[in-house]
Each structure stands twice: as structure tokens, then as C-alpha cells.
Length: 242
Ligand SMILES: [Fe+2]
Ligand SMILES: [Fe+2]
Image: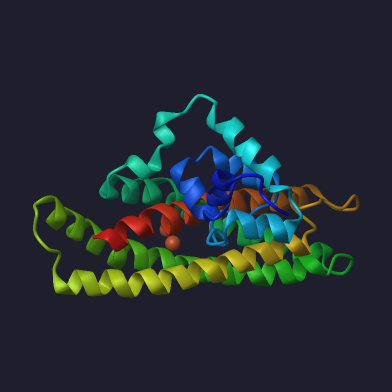
């Protein structure tokens, strides 16, 4: 599909991640169209329109429309200083995972045992989720114990007009690559769950636990999208600039 003007063309060359990082309200537009703005956020608007058969002009108009709505300054994450952003990620998204991972894994295993015979997809979902929970626990620990402290030290050095230590720079560089790869793997796994569950559609012949599990899985995915978006598209570029 062709864009109608030069200005539109340059807007179409921006990546989804960049657009959402610049204005979080646009996430709502991408969610409506089923466009991944976190783990798959590195593709351009033009590419995503081509792949999904969306008219670029329509999408750009929707993005512009949402930008004219009142801005919530408490969500202007890009403007936050790095240590504050790190604390926010830990206190909201890491806290959410620590509170919910285990419970969701228990629910998923329970519905696999009760409904697995008629709904074999839930057996696979339970297995995938258990791996996500295990990998996520290691991932969070690495961020909280290694990456984030190095980032905070480096940010403090920069603020005092000093260069960050060689050691911290090496940790940051190594972590950026490794954690980015882990985000992609975890994102792919939760997307497989969404696909297997047919977008978390609850079958008629099931129970309340089934319903709660799917609701919690959907909530988990939404939280993960925002969490990975904040890290991949806002925190990591700030870290690279240190
Ligand atoms: Fe994180
Ligand atoms: Fe992460």
C-alpha cells in the first residue's frame, strides 16, 4: 500500500517501538489492530501495514487522533530519569510477576489435569507457562541483581560528569544483548499460548478455574507487553547512551 505524502512516508519509516516510546497513548491503537509493540516493536509502520493488510493512512490518522487526547503526564516514561524508570519497572512489573507467576502456573496445571482430555491445548499451555515462569524468575533476578545496579551506578557517574567504570560498561553491554534475546523468547512463548488458546476464548464445557486461568493469562500477556516495551524501547536506549 502506498502512502500519500512525503511526510507520511517518513512517519511510516519509524518503528512501532519508537512510536510507542515517544507517546504511550499510541499503544492503544496498535493493540486494537493486534500489532505487537514490545517484543516485535523493531519493525517499521510500513512493514507492519504491509504484513497485516492495514491501510497506512488509516493507521496514521488513528495515531494522530489519539495524540490529540489529553496527555497523562504520569505516563511520560521517556522523560523519566533512568533510576526512577528502573524502580518503576521493579515495583510494578516485577512485583506483578512475583505475585502472579506461581499462581497462574498452578491454575494452568490444574485445568490441564481436569480438561486436558477434551482440550489438549491446555496441557501444552501449562507446560509452556511453567517454562516462562522459570525463565522469568532467572531473568528478573539478573536484571535486579546485575543489570539494574550497574545501570544506576553508571547513571550516577554520568550525572557527576564522570565516565562509568569499565566493569559497569561491560556488564551493561553484555546484558543488553542477552536480556533482549530473552525478551524475544518469552514474548514468542506467550504468543504461542495466545494462539493455542484462540485468543483466550473460554470453551462452553469448562469451569470457573478455566475461566480464571485464561483471564489471568491474558492479564499476564498485557503486563508483559508493557514491561518489555518499557525495557526494550525506553530503558535500553537510555542504557546504550550511557
Ligand atoms: Fe524486567
Ligand atoms: Fe526484562
